[in-house]
Length: 338
Image (cartoon, rainbow, N blue to C red; front, side):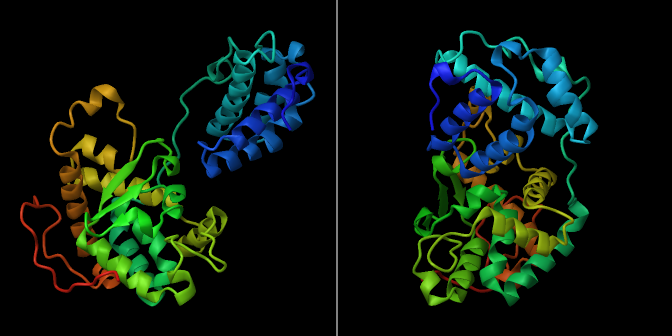
C-alpha cells in the first residue's frame, strides 16, 4: 500500500513506502527486490522503524542501527548495504516531496565506519580449475538436466540471476550468440555472448536429456509445471555440488581471473562479464567487439578442454588455450541442437 506524505511520520513509514516502490518497479531485478525486502524487514525496521523522522540523526543511527550491527558481528559490507537502503529511501521521499527535510542528506557510511571495506575473498583459485572442471563435467555427463547450470556459468562468467532467466528463444544457432535482455541484466543493458562449438554441443546434450514436457518450455532451466528454476533452489544445488565450499559467484570470479591469465585484453574481459566500463573506456573498444569476445571465449573454452570440458561436451577443440586463435580448429566430434 502506498503511503501518503502525511503518513510518513516515522522512519518505518518512509522505509515501507520506499520498499513498495522497489517491489512495484518492473525494471528492478527479482534478486534485488528479495535482498532489499530482507534487509529492510530483518535489519533496519526492527532497529529504527519506530523513530520519528524528525528525531533521526547521526547519534540515533549509531546507537540503534550501526553499532548493534557491529556488535552482532555483521560485516562492514552488510552494514553499508543497510545504510545505503535507508539513505535511498529518504532521498526518494525527499525528491518526491513526501518529507520536508531529509535527515540522511549530510550522512555517508564513512560517518560511522573507518577503514576500507574489503571484498569477499574468492573461494576458488586457478589451481582449483582442473579438478573443478573434471567434477562439473563428470556430473553433467551423469545427469545433464541438473549439471548444466554451473558449467554454463563457468563457461561465460554470468551471474546466477541472469543465467536462470535464459530462454531458448534468446539463443541463436545461426548467429552463434546468446542474448541476455537488458531487463535480465544487472547492468540494465543487453548483453551478447558468442557461442563456441563446445557450448553448442553442451546445449545439444542437455536438451536431448530434458524430459519431453520440459523440452517444450522456452525456459532454459524449466521445472515441473513449466516455471523456471528458482534462485533458492539453484543456490541449494550449488551448496550440494560444492559441499558449501564455494558459491555460484566464485565461478564468475574464477573465470575472470583465468581470462587475465590467458592474456585476454582487460576491456574485453570486463565486457564478457558485463561490467560497466564507462563512456571513456568504451571508446577504446574500436575493433569489432563481438569478434574479440568470441576469440577470448574460444581461448577460455580451449583451456576448459585441457581440464576435461570435453567429458561434458563430447567435443574437443584441439587448440592450445595460450595460443592466439586465428584459425578455425578441427573438432573431434559434432553435436547439434534440434
